[in-house]
Length: 176
Image (cartoon, rainbow, N blue to C red; front, side):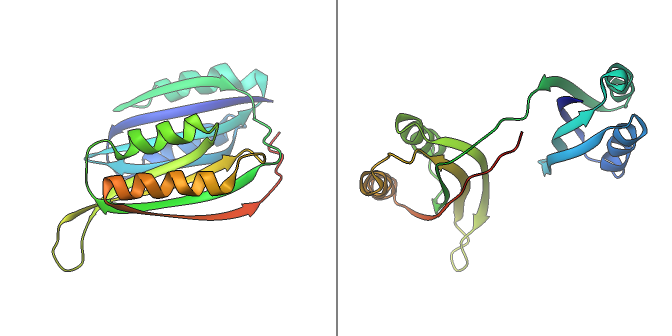
């Protein structure tokens, strides 16, 4: 089996998910992991699909025929992630420029891998002021000093006037 990442973006309309999943299924493919969302007036999808070698090319051709979407396919391998400490990082506060840059730079400096990151803007309950919200799923190396990690996050929160909370759980997964 081949593993492909398929990304698609285009103006939002009904039936996009049905059309793409139909093409994948009709070519013997299996949708294994995905993220789909409206961003502004567009719809964006990123999927991990497995498909038999014999069907890959015809599936890619069929996907390119979908009207109104920019579609990119890229071969990939399933990554095996074993060990580490999984942390969910939740952040919220006033919408300031550079929050993602500061947090991601800090995480990269600690060799922390971001598995998934979601952001959005919401309105504060009483004032209606814009609030920046971030959820990140990360894998922290087992040898990282957790006190230092937490201290660094606290410094970022204080400096930027935001709240950062983390939750952890040990895990060992095999996605190969």
